[in-house]
Figure 1 (spheres, each protein chain N blue to C red):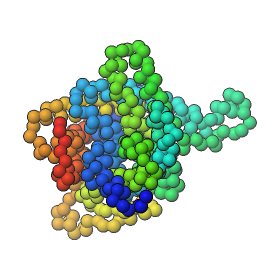
Figure 2: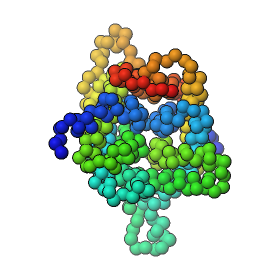
Figure 3: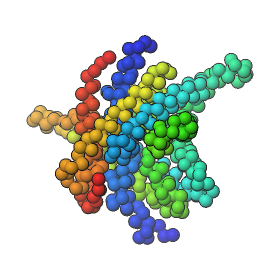
Figure 4: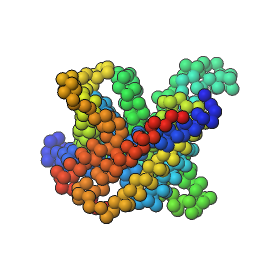
Length: 213
Length: 217
């Protein structure tokens, strides 16, 4: 493992083949609610890219050095504690820890933006709190544990998933924009139509599944 | 409070019919679609969600007077995350095959907007028994939709109906070989992700048609 091709393959997979929204159904709540407007979609898309790229590697470090089985052995070597940590398994804590890290990181990113880039803050600011409970962020961290990625792979995967979300939401928003004057049956309007459109988008993205890198 | 007076019936019935969390409030769709490939997964997921929703509603409703409103989101998240961890561990202990199939989606119950939404909108304002009924009603509303979706996906996509049991699932019904011989074919698309979107879209449309609800856009 390792090497540029692997990273390229993980990235392409995360963006197109295993798109986090269209193949794994993650982050659909905000996906459907916000795709009514293209500007807002671009905003939340960027926010997801930023937060996923930051939180996935941080959660990787926490999982690798605190939570997984035998992760605490560095305590033995560093502080020469007598207790043997090689069998300590704290991974049942991962859900609570991951969600707290995500909530804290979202808060931090928001504060940084407010301090250093007022224009970015005014365009992304309102979306950041929403992102803390966006399942694609927690999903990214959980998938990285399940697939046993190393730290660089996690970073590439997080970024790729974010870009995948960005692409999907902007595509759906644009299609919905074009549909504004179409004659849709009244009770299918809104969410019903958005679901059918997402199905079509998802079919279109399935065409990428032949790509093998 | 009497358990089955008209008010508590309304609390249970509304989220199943006219105010369904998935098809009308559009909450909690993420996990709803991923687990609908097979009926048994949908049933187990429904039970897990009902458990988490009822207990989080009751716990948060009991402590609602002691939660400062500024930090309520953190408190809600930690209560919900602890309950979900319990469910996750229970599934791994007693239904290992199922917990492998559901993979990360059990963990993702935390970010299921229905649970946060009900906690915020109902549990923090009402007593524990009402909050329990509200959790039950919303859980059943969620379950109804994902069981309908998974029924169609499994029947027409894979040609079987599977009920949950301790292991890999009990096959209740499968389309007879003779049908296949006569030219019947499963719709493979339904097993893949686009199928879930299409079926949920149609279910939402049907339900809004029945209850006459329109959404302006």
